Length: 186
Image 1 (cartoon, helix red, strand yellow):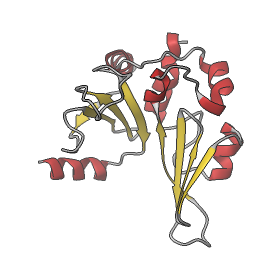
Image 2 (cartoon, rainbow, N blue to C red; image 1 turned 60 degrees about the vertical axis):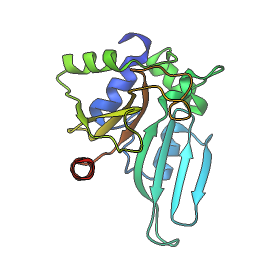
Image 3 (tube, one colour; image 1 turned 90 degrees about the horizontal axis):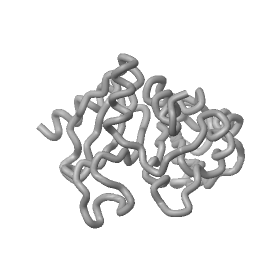
């Protein structure tokens, strides 16, 4: 096992899943794996997020009477840098499988270990509203995006993170979204 739970992040980036859960999985399936201890946020009748601490899953639907459709998940890695940090309700599950989680995930270490596995990460344009404070790297096969602190900025980046720390990991980011970003930023 890779030390300091890098194996967890490597699994997510390589597979585009969290503990085998795909971004498209139903709320019931996510609850089956991550448990029923979560914070739920509804965005009217058409959007929902379940927050498990480190992991958030999002769903949407076209009408209130239709079933939820998985939209994406985000690992809020930056939350681990806060004093008194926990992995949230899934802490036991994640620690049992991956061990101890460090307060910060260093981008260069994650990138180096993924490169050794033959998993490339390509830098893609950041929105002007987030650049240069954030940089985004994309894994085309798994459609995972990794957001990294590029420059620390007051009110722009979390106070507990340094340049080169991973802020979050999100899936999916499709090839169409990457092309849209390239066209938008220019």
